[in-house]
Each structure stands twice: as C-alpha cells, then as structure tokens.
Length: 122
Image (cartoon, rainbow, N blue to C red; front, side, top):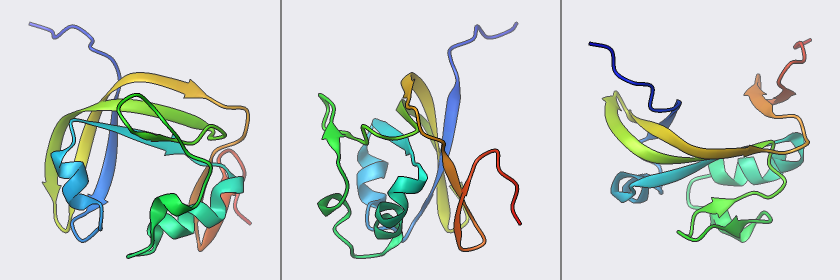
C-alpha cells in the first residue's frame, strides 16, 4: 500500500545547547526564513549564544506569533512532524503548510562567508 502524498517536508538541525532548544521542543509549528545577503549581520546574531535574537531585523509576526522576515528569499511555515535525535543535535522534520518566495537570491554559509545559491565559490 502506498501512502498518499501529504506535501513536502523540511528538516532543520537544532543544537541541543542552543538557547532556543526548549522552545522548539515544545512547539508544534515552526517557520524557516531563507535569508539573503542583506541578512548577514542578523544571521551572525542568531548564531551567537546569549544574543537577543529578535532585537535585530525587521521581523513581522504571523497570527501564531512566529517571526517572519518580510524581505526573506523565502518563508516556509511548517507543522512539526517528528523530532529525531542526531548526536548533539535534534533533527526537526516539518510538514510544509505554506510557503512564499521573495525577489532576492538566497544565500548559504560557505567557508566563513555567505555565498548566493547558484554562484560558484572561488
């Protein structure tokens, strides 16, 4: 028997030592904001332990209070499907409920800096 398609899944790896770990473990929903090069400073703040993450950035909040970056390359809203132990991390698997894309290029962290997706590293 084949399961019917229920929509895409997203996975996020969350360190057990992250300040936000207990909040994510208690949450039934989460949002993934796909950042652009304009978010470089904000991303560094989010990666810094003890930093007030939401004191920076131009966040909007949805009806459930989830933070959304209006100028993100994409925003993906998910319902937690499963949390799987993975060493010093937990792998959160989320079922995508809705998503939107922006007009800017997404970036990834590569060799100590941000690299727009689709560009070659030097």
